[in-house]
Length: 307
Image (cartoon, rainbow, N blue to C red):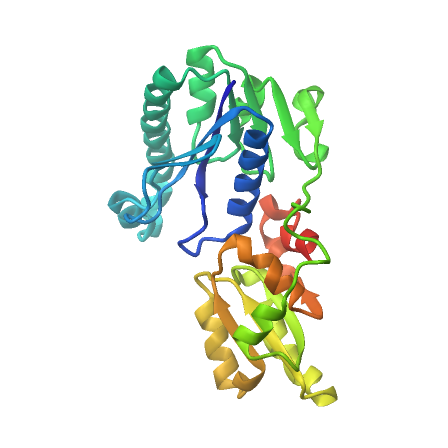
């Protein structure tokens, strides 16, 4: 059957430095469904003009339909008080436009089911399911969902039942997140990465991620001198690209730690297992900033499973 998988705020593959965890998760769900024999149409975000709008990978067809970085969005979002007033109308207009795009695509592809990665930013999947009278499967990863989507959904897939209000819990299918063990396994060879980074004879401490404020890169940099008191034959390998990575690189330079850090920038997802395999210790030092965001209370770190 034709499955419509909507991830309107997610970029696949990850390119623009917006955080790759969601991109990895979305891609793996879509690819695995496609590997089971169905045709999956993944409707996702287009963040860069150079990205093609349609790309086919076997039974997985990627449609980059959604744009959240429009001039109107940037103008409104840069003005705090104006954004407060315009936020709901803006997202409502986006939902209408996205629903129209989805209905147009559904006419050609004849979807059998809509599978939506929940988002508080749009109701496109929910509206399309109602209009087309199609079953809606809702994937809930955090508390950023629309209450209407919970009511319309036939089934709700989530790693944590407590995220779902009691009136909708009878629809829940619990499914813990994990890792693709065909890619990440102990026999992966990391020697090529060690040679490439010039760290063949050193003990490697890995951080994998986009470096957001709650990921704990500040804590890694601050802890590095404590490690260096014990051993100088060590290197901190920081793999990933994101909007704050540059800040941590500057901090490393300012503290005279450049000789013990390697920043690779974003790497292709297929290469990530080699970087993990090249390491001796892997870090996921989430800090208290994570707790400041209610929707992140149920965060499940993919990097931990990959490690």
